[in-house]
Image (cartoon, rainbow over all chains, first blue to last red; front, side, top):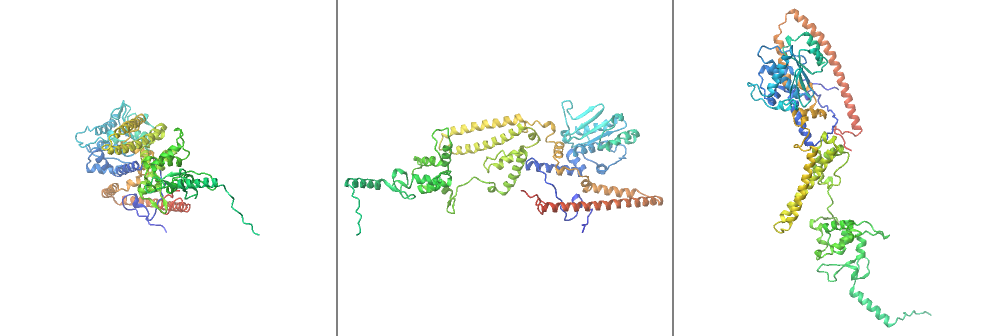
Length: 217
Length: 398
């Protein structure tokens, strides 16, 4: 007799049929129990952050959001296609920056691109991310150094943000990257991405969508 | 006629001589209680018990040796054990002291010294007759000091086994030992005392990471460092022991100094190894890889395929926060919609089509889920039958 599956409640465990056990193949890790427990605790925090990205940004990056920003952020977090239709001065770029920062911080090997009608426009968003990271925005009080410490730095790139004229970018230790695509989008064909962020999307040419949407397929 | 055999006539001088001999033997001889033969006192070990007036033991040297060496009926000598040695000492009324025993074993094994005693018994019996042990009898033995006597046998405190460890320590010890064996392919601490092994394995495992796995020299350095710090701890214990004696015996200061110097050298050696191999946080050469950062840890966990870090979008979608937002969004959409009759017609058509497709999809999914659950149950039953897992789905360790 099959058991009834209840599709209500919070968390994946609620969806399991009752009295059904899963066998999980034991995995052996070459490390001390103490260290393994520490990693599992960190994994728990990461998973919490993935479920609650707004809270994660507030706690870890020190960014405070308005209610409608929280709504937009959460609604966009796992939705495949999103359009932010927001008024002037409503903080689209400002909201997009922590959104991309949270995505790169919480997901390993995450690749994202910032695209706009012009290269300068996409660089503008990258500058916003840089300003938040370096705590250069006066109205953002309580920003932390967490994101700054996660950036991969080198001799030639002391703060972690690369200002290559072709593409501004940053990279985290988890292998996650965000890069801008300039107006010469034909040169950027064939890239792979898990997120295309079109800033001022209504002014982006149809050809650019044709060239860049395949990034995410 | 019966013939009465007359005793052989012996010259009176000979009888006198034999009488003298017998008299001498009676005066200087003792009867061994094991072989029952009357022997000269020189054939016995001296008994220093003040109550003993005859000054020698009641078992002759030869019989004591035979007991200690476990000589069988064919006259073949076997290995001297603590038990056989104690058995002989019991008859000789001499003490069994662990320190003397250890020294005797060492002495019999030491070929460099020149004066080789062929077995520990010879060495032990020689040593126990030294002046410092005069007046001690069998009941001054070490085992009586601890009071571990039972079942008619004298119990020697044997080295601890894994079963002697407490439950918590043993479970961690077993995990760490398995991890070490899996990592190294051999047991680096098999000759260490069992009571020290849990600490050694725990310390060693705490050093394991990918850099240690990839670098053979670093691996050796890590083992050496763990050994060194264990030895340093032993020296620390010895120093504190000597420090307590300092008031009564100021001469121990030189021993303390010598131990402190040795300790210093060992620490320097361990630190040099750590520095050369980038082992401590201070000398870590993997900083560029983002060790200790959140994203670095995420990458590390992803690479080691830790289940807990797996990306599960279903879990995120169904979490309280996101499902609440989704619900609010849906309600808002419904509020915004103000359809007329034509819109409704289109909507109903669209929904009917959608419902039909989703129903089919759902039925397929339910059937697929049923098959998977059946397979899951079959696999579990198979594993249980083969005694690979128990009913609670735990792996049965061989």
